[in-house]
Image 1 (cartoon, one colour):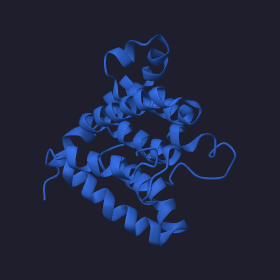
Image 2 (cartoon, rainbow, N blue to C red):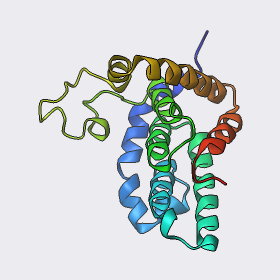
Image 3 (tube, rainbow, N blue to C red):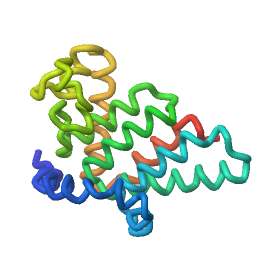
Image 4 (cartoon, rainbow, N blue to C red):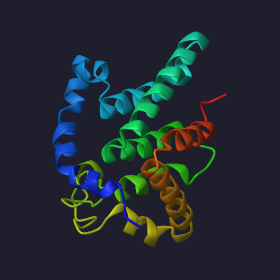
Length: 183
């Protein structure tokens, strides 16, 4: 089966270059205004961490903004944005424990650098000698929790296939139903 995302994998370098400035652009608002999927996911993560302290009206508005942000990230099919969805799920919480790891694995599948050499993932573990640059999230997950890996991998393949087939809305709705802040 020919993978549509092979074309996107070749773009991974350009996506990484574009995303390096996303967080600095988030600070001045231009990335959010332009719908940058990484900036939107960063905002969604920030809003999620503040939901508990919000009044009902603010919470409702924030949840709607989060939904739109996650939707934009899914629609972008940007490998790093998909990885950020996995991180977001870890903070937001989901009724399905495989959902966050599944989005992380899907990001790896479509071209995101999931090795510990990637500073977003490694976060100093190579320098501290806790991991090697040749290790990756999928390999670590498979080694440390084979049953979780198996279930998350199966779900990740569904996510990738849906995105390849232009059915991102389906996997998005499945995800949003599993998020714990949803009523």
